[in-house]
Image 1: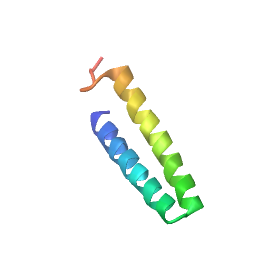
Image 2: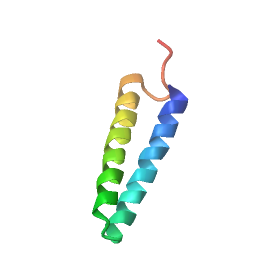
Image 3: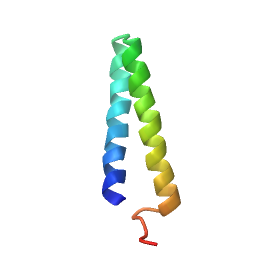
Image 4: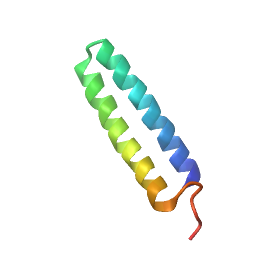
Length: 59
């Protein structure tokens, strides 16, 4: 789960960057999908860290 958490964290960071870029370009659909990706992947990453701790425990 540790590697998956890192990958999803990077996806969330890139989605946040994409949200700001789409907002600057006034691209509503880009903002919608980038923010949705940021919300879903960011929520999963944060809740996984809260639940298992970092680094995650095995049991």
